Picture (cartoon, rainbow, N blue to C red):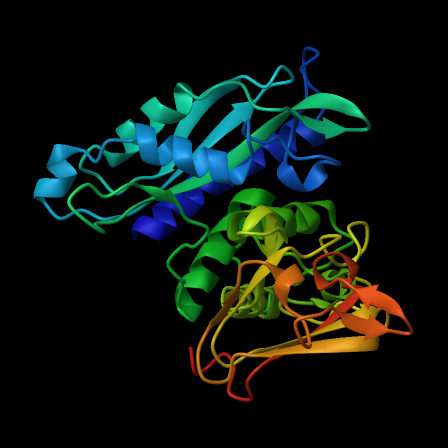
Length: 335
């Protein structure tokens, strides 16, 4: 129920943003961009590690939360302005005990960021930040957390159908057999909302293959457990979970442009290739026995030296050109 409430709040935020972008405004308004729309994402001064240090140094674990053993993830959304200022901080998921209020206090006090850019110009950007509260010692520092509790198959369908009902503003009930078409503007809106809410990036082919609402919901259920790719080492930068192969791992096609680090869940294999179309040198990451986290992909090498390809070094943190995702046979029933 907590996740459902958070999702519906997140849905409302995304939908209001999308509506503002597609419906003619009554008065001129400055566009607020989403993270996937940008050429350059906004960054905290000093980068991801500096932001983690800032949060750890400034957030105080609320006494009420500590006394009642409250742990978990608070999720906030806020605007990073064209000048880098942080405004409009809102809670989209709270765990109680004062954790949400404390997170807002510290985020509102952040120094100015380096603003995001679109078309070479600084722009307003809506940013979502999860902050984890967890007891680790006598003085537990909250840390950024890129995970949310997984949703069950039935729970995912409930979220998708409710989101579709609101998107279409339809009086007709949404069923698993209700038609879906990527050529329909409202269907595109719904898909974008789901991608943003669950940090999942579909391939172009995936977007066009759905014909009914049921398979769409099942895809997002499975994609919760997909490998997660990050553009920077240390699980920083832009990130997305990817469920299907990427023959062209490019920012303007089916990928993120580069991979700095990644997390491969148990039971899944990822094969990276140095050339497009699954060609060239390959690196297999097999999480058959347990989840594998690689905080710095550039450190993965065949020996202590870099993998050679015709005399030219292959730097996996920069030169991954395509990727295959191999799922377990019983997926998703085993999850």
